[in-house]
Image (cartoon, rainbow, N blue to C red; front, side, top):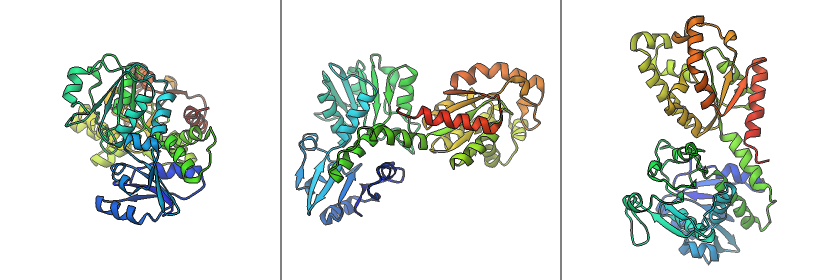
Length: 417
């Protein structure tokens, strides 16, 4: 390996994708056990590497030189091999700073609570200090002389202005977890989560619901990678490179989720989009049939709507964990907030707004089997469709035209331009 990233578990890392978009070298992901990382560092058979959880402190004894920033933080995430000597840097500092500044979250004279005690926590502490935080509280499960416990956080520090999560809580595959209960904090002006998979954690989506500026860690990951590239190659990156790569990765990784009434064209449009964008297509109704071994009408007849909705939520949660896919949902998927929260973790919701007079009855949908039933569902659900959607697509032309409109909106939405 010449260039790459070492860590304990890397199957869902975006680092390879990001570095290879820079385009000057191939980049490998190398998973190492605790024993293997020591042997790897002794041999140091590489040109340059990034280091991720849990080895940002482990690698330090093997380095010949450490930058002042990395030394002050006590964590290294970038190592360059120069003629057999290893030089360590901390580009996470630049990434976290860029993420906070991009979201216009001010830390100056603010009380900042940092969740976690690892290398990214140390980096966040240094960043908060450099940005003028008045008080910085580090929080860990066990607590020590340098950090508070979560019990102490809730007892003494719910007046924090900014929360920064550096723990893996909420990260794939455990995406339906949150490190703290946001309801306990009454003074928040910003939330940052270093987790980037999913693209929007429960912590971040919960903050946004309260109109608190909040963002996950993808921009941080890209910004630190661009800085690492500069150390790798001794070249200065173009000022637009971080924004360009961030936009590309976000567009590629974000799911396109289609909601709407039965017979509004979700499945047809979804299949066209999947072919156009070379993405996997998922129809949640079809997955429910596959999972249960019964048609949807049979589930309603035998078990009732409540049981159907339980299965639907289970299926939606399962496929919401994926990234870069097209998801067509059932007509009633928007009725449960739990479904919407799951779909938005990795996706943008597009409501296909087809006029009522164009919606036709269908025997295989128990709640849309007659014109009267469709009209009733339409009137009951229309406001929920519009308020839960990120984008509303008025259906006025062919499914091909609708797919093209969604494609245009999707790539424009995720652009930094």
